[in-house]
Length: 225
Image (cartoon, helix red, strand yellow):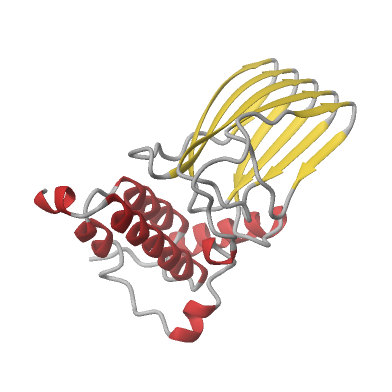
């Protein structure tokens, strides 16, 4: 417990980022199944001491330099995270139209999303978010919204569906203001909002196949003694 008071927030944040990148590489190399991977990511985001982060990698094999160099387009391939959002507010509006934000783009601190009889795709896999929450406030009427996040991004999702659907619940809540996170609040009327976790460059079909194969391997693997 004493270590959490001695280590600086910057050092802890950098160690957390290194640990998350390493976990992404181990997941890509099939050293972790989906459940274990998400559990370790959750613990990494909640860690308050360097020893807690080291423990998440202690039982995993070392990563060769060649494998570490090709970590699956994780945070290492994103631009450097800004210290703060460039804008306080940024409206995303779709009226019987399709709107897509993909690749490297800069969300505002608070992003109202209005979608009526249209479609919106917000892809955060190549986005470098500053510390603290980035808010997505959704009003969706007879439309569809997809939000794609990488495995290492903390997500807090809530909403009210009225004759509609919200897929994808909160995976974890970050422990403090120094951790980038996505906070999603949605009101959905006769529409749908889907929050999906994918590796960078991975299609929806590829993600479904990967998760299905991971589950099959887990069912077929002999129980540990």
